[in-house]
Image 1 (spheres, helix red, strand yellow):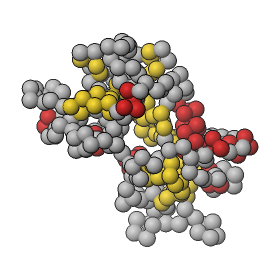
Image 2 (spheres, helix red, strand yellow):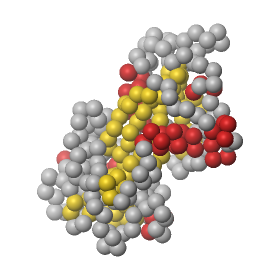
Image 3 (cartoon, rainbow, N blue to C red):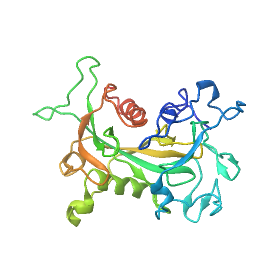
Length: 283
């Protein structure tokens, strides 16, 4: 079910229907708003099927093609979580159908898994303070200003939350820690002391479900768990003092003021809005 807690409940598939598929010159079949839902009969619908050569080269983290294997959908299949936060999804001709409807593209595109591709997004925040350590407030809303750790993605140049994919059999809490460490702390090249970053500060789950992501297709889509780790006190050696540097998939990394005008990747703005509301901060 696309519950009311879903940021996109009222906006089905906007980025999932972007005219040109990212990282390619493939054009999506144009899908008007009234034809997104699979329940709408549309015999003329004829999307191109596209899966990137990277995926077709069968990296260890990707599924083979349907036909070469028969995955068990809507269950945990050999350690791979093929369940959806949206509930049970349909499978047609051996292929799963995007629970939010048509995207204008069949196949897997850039995504490794048929069906749901599970990610975890750690939103690490602190209060913005002045030189004396006092909380700063927005001049118009008068609410305190939050800052979050943002990375600039190498693939598209957009600012984003430093998230990543859940490895098979991995606990989401570990994914959150691993991804934040790899993307924002660059722990792959750090010493073990620098790497020991305990994510134990006020964890708050802000979203769990489908992501309106430009990589989505009719048969493969992104889902995430977004969790806020908030450094309320600005404690030294905790989140605020993190030795930020750009890691794995990140070009740059920095603390950024949370504000509705700041453009972000996919539906990350929705997550930040939920965090700001929960923390009674400026949005």
